[in-house]
Image (cartoon, rainbow, N blue to C red):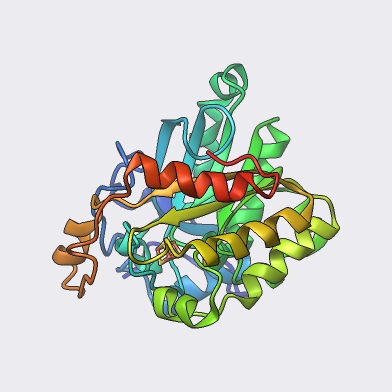
Length: 293
Ligand code: SF4
């Protein structure tokens, strides 16, 4: 039986943080974590998602210099509606693989790092999984972070961005938007989903002059079509709010998760991109006037 109580209104009122704890902090998101919220009744999970009073986190990691500006704490959420062939954290696809964490607990965890994050010009990044599967929790945590003077960054595929009001967007200092590929068919093969909502979110952020970085995962033989990349670059250049493009080299660090979860991994033989290929792709973005790294 869950230790989570309810009010008559069905809201989560007692603290799931009294449950036996798996450490929220992980050395890296590459720790395989499964079924840490699996004991909760489905109604509690639904209630948590609706109110955002509780979320599900794979982990917190600290000291990241690659997930936004400065040095950052990253909250890795669980739940994703996409099935990217190169996903390196497929254990985050299922919401209940994450640890149930109240906003209050997550905020207290973050408070520990508040001073250090400011000194290191960093902040809080919420990544996943896909954070907008838990949009209410994300906005509550970002609101708490901003109240502590902590910079906020959302890494997202944008698919559920219409869940965010413009007021919600005010709680996000920077969006890092993943654009996986340009061609519609290839996008469906690669992710299982349409690219339309991602591009619509990019345009919305641009219209509102909100800061954005674009993240592009480079996989030789899968996402390295030069014309396709040039199309992404041309689109990004028209937006006017893209501060940088991050070209992320594919790696095989998540392969063991696919194997351990019994999932069919199709990139067994995919190679890590060479530095020359990464430079060439950066140059395609650079030719459109974008800063690419
Ligand atoms: S959007 Fe991210 S978390 Fe979701 S499947 Fe793709 S790579 Fe994995």
